[in-house]
Length: 183
Ligand SMILES: NC(=O)c1ccc[n+]([C@@H]2O[C@H](COP(=O)([O-])OP(=O)(O)OC[C@H]3O[C@@H](n4cnc5c(N)ncnc54)[C@H](O)[C@@H]3O)[C@@H](O)[C@H]2O)c1
Image 1 (tube, rainbow, N blue to C red):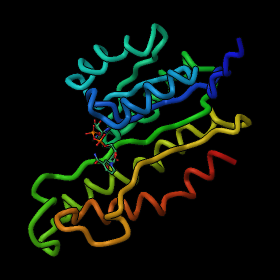
Image 2 (image 1 turned 135 degrees about the vertical axis):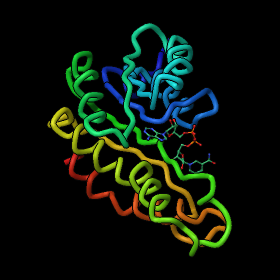
Image 3 (image 1 turned 180 degrees about the vertical axis):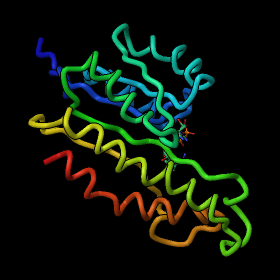
């Protein structure tokens, strides 16, 4: 009987943004594994690492795990160095990370603090640029792809989305970073 070939067999994909089994990134990782990709999961800190280490075996035996907090200097490079020891190259990068302080997701938008604005931008938008820069040398010549997750609030005002709407607009306009690695 004809068995359809998995779409991503032989591909190495790094997924940023699994915190728990409700994370969109977890669904993405499961779909990648189902399609035959080898998956690396990163986790933000030791606490989330515990949860990710418990989930990872559900993807099969060969999952690469590496810590990465995009706000910590040098973490992105350390993360890709660790993944580079396991993957001969990277074919796909999934950016499924975002953060804003609770107090910035409500109330009057003009009360947004600089700290809150900067943190939301750093984690939710700048991180795509940082990840693409670090991934680029490992993606060369591989027809690699980058995926990130946005929301309607990037384009239209959505009540209480506030600083995250600005961050998502920035994320969407950081696409040149993704094109640079996919060349
Ligand atoms: N849940 C929704 O309804 C929805 C809708 C549209 C878009 N999105 C987007 O989907 C993506 C995933 O969201 P989710 O709903 O799965 O939530 P989630 O909380 O499961 O995922 C967010 C991830 O961001 C990571 N993160 C936060 N700060 C970080 C940092 N400093 N360094 C590294 N990682 C950090 C967290 O560890 C977590 O894994 C986000 O970009 C979110 O904006 C979600």
